[in-house]
Length: 202
Figure (tube, helix red, strand yellow):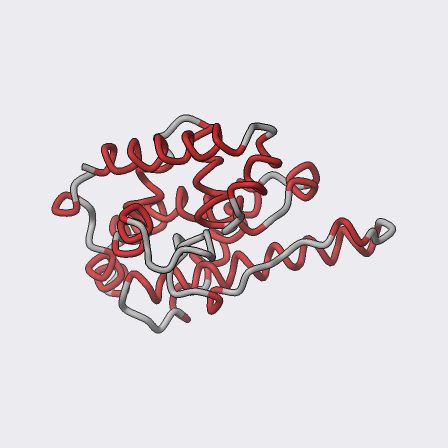
C-alpha cells in the first residue's frame, strides 16, 4: 500500500484516546501482522512446536487493549516499542513455564530480543558489509507497519527468508541451514523476496 494511503498511527492513537472506538479497533487490527512477524523472529524453531505464534499475538493484543490507557506515547515508533515489550514479556513467561515443566536442555536456549536492541526491527543483518545495501536502507527507512503489512502478503518462503535474514539477523549460511537450501539459493531467494516486497509496497 502506498504511504499516502496507509493509516496515520499517531492520528489513530490520538482519536482512540478521545474515545473513538472505530479508530481504536483499526489501530489494533493494523498491528496484528506486525506482531505475528515479530513473534516469529523472537522464538526458535523448537518453541514454535510448543506454542502457536498467533496465540502469543492474541494474548499481547488483549493485554494492550486492556491497558491502552497506560500507553503514554504518541508516535508509531513508541506504540510499536510498547507492543514489543508486552510480546517479549509473554514469550519470556511461556519459556519460563515450559522450562518449569520440562528438563532444561542447553540446545533449547531461546533468544528473547529486547525492543531496545535496535531502533528498527528490520536492521541490517550481514555484519561484514562496510555500508548498508539499497535493500537494507529501504527496510530501515520505511514504516515498520507498512513493511510487515506487505510482508504478510508474500509467499511463505519469501516471508521466512526475510524473517531469518533481516529480523533474526542470521548470516546467509545460517539461513541456508535453517531452510535446508544452498547458500547461493538462499541469497537468490532473499533478493527476489526483497524485490517482491518493494513491489508490493509500491
